[in-house]
Image 1 (cartoon, helix red, strand yellow):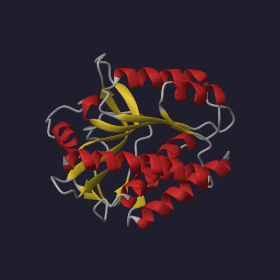
Image 2 (cartoon, rainbow, N blue to C red; image 1 turned 180 degrees about the vertical axis):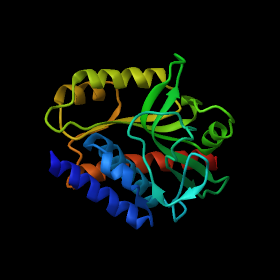
Image 3 (tube, helix red, strand yellow; image 1 turned 30 degrees about the vertical axis):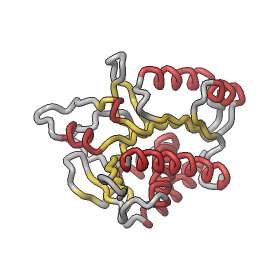
Length: 239
């Protein structure tokens, strides 16, 4: 159990160091393995963006839109514009032949789909215009992201002593159905469950299993999925 925690933390810190940033001390001291797993997938997504020629260095901002190198991730779901703690998101800007593709990557934010019920998105890549819209709302800390502006969503499941439940896969399918079809959604977890994998494959949903800091093959496959999605998004801007 402790090995998974320390491996995840070490990998995250290594990746952030390469991005000239450091992990917030309070987050490090309190984050559990499931929190770190989300942050680990976050770093894989950023690596995919780098391979797809995102502008570098990647900048990080807090909830006020200020540039920071002190990375504070959420450990529980919250609203994107919550100001009492300066949670961090990444800014991705891809140069294209047309307008630049400008995106933000957030952990643990609420988003709303057709049901109008706020639901957590473990990792959400959204249009930068949506992030700015939410942050520009004054005197209100409960602005919800519209799922129509999410272009990549990731559901992360990390179990230290058990397998991912079939119900988690069903819940993911319900989330995807509620959210806008503008986005591409992925279900990722750190072990394997044939019934979950079969169900997600039947509905043609992206997934990856057995993810850990040492699972090179699985990391490569997931990174390639993310990179391909960025490639498609860039092409749409260039049209």
